[in-house]
Amino acid sequence: MKCINCGSEWNATGKAAVSITNCPFCGESPVVKKTEQKAFEASKETLEAIYKQFGADILLGKLNAYIADFAPSLSTANKRLVNSVYEFGASKALKESINGTQEDKERAVKIAIRNMTEAHVSIESSETIIYEFTDALGWKIEKEKSLSTTQDTTKKPVVNNDLAEAINVIKKQDRDNYKKVRDILNESALQGNAEAMYWLGKSYMGKKGILSQFPEALKWIRKAAVNGFADAQYDISKEYDGAKRIEWLRKAAEQGYIDAQLVLAESYYEGSGTRKNYTEAIIWFRKAADQGSSEAQYFLGSCYEEGNGVKLNYAQAAEWYQKAADQGDKNAKEELKELKKLGKI
Image (cartoon, rainbow, N blue to C red; front, side):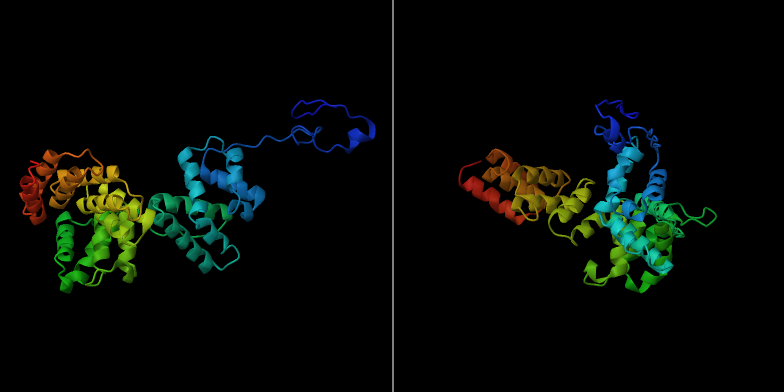
């Protein structure tokens, strides 16, 4: 007997041949030609096809097993975006509202998008992929005006000077005028300005500055962080421990944010929230020191004096201590005196 699909042959005659419903080699019917699966190029088409053929349980539960078959040429970036829906709990939020009311579904969409953005997926990508899933499910969800898209161009744009003045009001903590400048900040934030998002968030914070106690502040500062604003990334890092904290610190540090560089360096130096790593600590202390941080310069001097992460070198230690001392660092001045007293320089 020969399979029409894979071409394999085996001995099967009489009743044995009639009883065979699947080829022992490829698993398909040996007498019915398998219909070739149409391949899709876009994630939206792929999701719709999988839902149409297998239903919501597969779309929101076991989709990953079918992506390769339905979209073998789908870009790696799009595959990762689809996978992130499962990885970060967005699909779970949608699945729990399959049989819910329209309000339940709208709430689930917001939760799903929030889960994605909190996991550092951009707002634009999060919204795009979640709405592709809901379109595939047949949900009639009206897309909210996105922070990641340009607003109505007929609207009068915010004047840069006005925005700068609004931000300055928040920086000065002129609380009597916070409400007056929020409209300016809000308009610019809705146009995708991450700096405006950050200072709008700051306008909702209390005097003690505990971010987690003020939901509206946290919402906007988190949006600013996701959109790449270093100050916000540094502030958000304080809301986490361990790997998440290090991840946000690194994002801000890589943009040259000195405070983030210092805290990141100290974390590696002390093994706080991550493994102790003197080499990594030296890298970030040096970046901050090169930008003029006297604290980082002092720590570098200490590393060279003690041989932590670098080869022990008293001359280098003295050089960094001197840089810090020139900026008035008292500890650095004392260390220089001690090195001289001991005859090490």
